[in-house]
Length: 217
Image 1 (cartoon, rainbow, N blue to C red):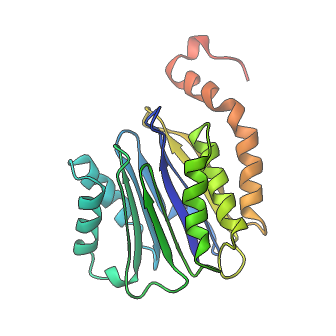
Image 2 (cartoon, rainbow, N blue to C red):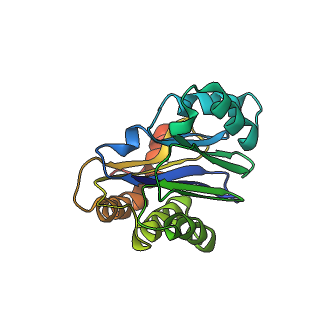
């Protein structure tokens, strides 16, 4: 019962992800990103080991399709896995094993990949990908709106309880790493957190790289 997406900003090279699910603390298990490298989604009978493994493959020079093929071939339980990969050039790829429960779907396009399982209908994932492509502005906002669009299109086959939003720029630390670990309306709560955090993103980066000139907060 998870719907998620990876997105890339072609203008800045930022990579990020947004995800929501019915269980607790989804932000710790599904989305893995690295600056200048790309991102990996691993869900359904989730194996978080596939995230770091996929990032290592991307770092080694594999593109999104090659990384996905290696992940599928290298895990003995691929039939239970749903995986999305986005590389630093914007190439994307997705896989859903034969045991992934319906309604499940994938959307693959330039700079975005969205996947979902145990959804209320087949429109959810397409709504996320289309909204991401049609939305302008900061990558985090585009990802947030895409997640909201997935919920508005029907979301999961049941209520969601956790959600997460992550974005990497050029630094080793994330620009944005916001999580709602348990809430009756986690995507609404994530929106509130993002609105509070958005004005501070640049300040936290400056505190790290140029503390002498950082603004007092």
